[in-house]
Amino acid sequence: MITFWIGLPIAVRLVLLALLGLAGGALANYLIYSFAYFNPRAISPWGRGPEGGPSRRASDWIPVVGWLGLRRESGIHGPGFWIRPMLVELGMPLALIWLYFFETQSGGLLPSSLRFPQFLDGYEATASHIFVAHGLLMVLMTAATFIDFDDWTIPDIITIPGTLLALLLAALSTEVFMPTFIVSGGVMQVIPTTFDSPWFVPDKWMAETGLLTGWAIWTVWCFALADWRWSGALARRRGLPRAIRHFVNGLFRDGLWRLLAGIWIVGAIGIFWGWTINGATWLGLFSALTGLAVGGGVTWAIRIVATWALNMEAMGFGDVTLMAMIGAMLGWQAALIAFFLSPFAAIVIVLIRFVITRDAYTPFGPYLCAGAALTVLWWDRLYNGWLSDNLLLMGPVLLWFSLVMLGLMGALLFVWRHIKMRLFGDH
Image (tube, rainbow, N blue to C red; front, side):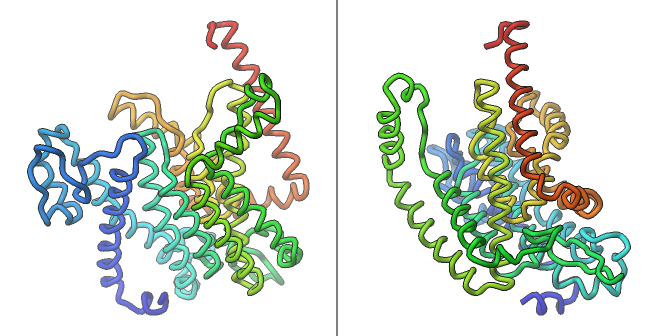
C-alpha cells in the first residue's frame, strides 16, 4: 500500500491528502459536537436540527461549504457559531499536507546531516508509515482539544478507540515510531524509537517477562477506565470492609464493566498472539503498551499527588487517558517530552484564548496536545540531541529519580497550599 502511494505523482498525492484532510476535519467536528459529555450541541449537519429551525439539506454534509450554508441557523445558535468548525475543516487539509512534506519530503524528523535527497528517497516509505500514525493522532487530538475547551472534559469515545488504534498500528509495523539514530562501526543507522531506545537490549522483554508486563499494563488500563471511586472518608468512619464493599458495588453498578471486561479479554488474547509471533510484531506492540503505561502512568501519578497536596482535583482523568493514547501512538520517550513541554505550550494557548474569549482559564488537555505536536516538530533536537544521552547517562536510576522528583513536587505543592491558606485564607 505504501509502495503504491509513493509511486503516485506528487500532485495526485496532494489532492488525495487534501480530500483526506477535509474528511478528517469533518470527523473531528462530528466528534466535537456529537460526543461532548455535558454540552452536545445540535449545530452539526450530522444530527437533528434544532426545533423550530430550518430543515437540513444534503449540501450541509459537504465539508467547509456545509458550514457556510448553516449560517442560516445563526438566529438560533448565535452569530459566528459556524466559523470555528469551518476553520477546523479548512485547516485540517493544510495541516495534513504540511505534515506530509515535513515528515516524508524534507526529513524533518531526521538529523540535519541525513536530510539529503539520496537518503530521503530510501527513507520515504518509513516516513510515510510515521505520517499515517501522526495524521490520525492529529485528528483525534483536534477533537479532544476543542471538546476540552468547551466542556472541560475529554470523552472516552476519543481516547479509547485512539489507544486501540495505536496498539494495532504498532503491532502491524514498528515503523510508525519516530526515528532514532545510532552509530555502529562508524556508520550511522536510523531505526524506530521502540520501547528499549536508547539502550536497545530487548532480550528479556521478548520472553515471559515481557508477556506478563504487557498483560499487567493492559489490565491496569482497563481497570482505570472503569467507573470506580474509593472513599477514604467512608473507610475512616465506617471501617475498611464497608469501604471495600462500597467500592466493589460502585464498580459493577452499571453495564460499563461488561464492555471493559470484553475489551480486556480480547486485548489479553491479542497481546498473547503478538507475543507468540514475536519479532517486529511483539516489539511494536510492547513499545505501544510501554508508551501507554508511561504516558498515562506519569499523568495519573501527578494527578494523584497534586490532588492530595492541593486538596483539590488537579487534573481530570480524561487527561490521563489522553496521555495514554499519545504515549501508545508516539512511544514513551515522546510522551515524557510532550508532558514536560505542555506547560510552555500553555503560556501561548492561554494568551491566545484570553485575547479571543477574555477567559484566562484553560483546561489541561489542549496543553498536552500542543506538547505532543511540539515533540513531533522538534523531535530530533529534543530526543536525539538531548533526551537519549541523558537516558543513557541515568540508566537504572531513572525510575528512582522520577519517584524522588514526584515526591518533591508533592511536598512543594503541599507547602504552597499551606502558605496560601496562611497568607490569603484560601482553603
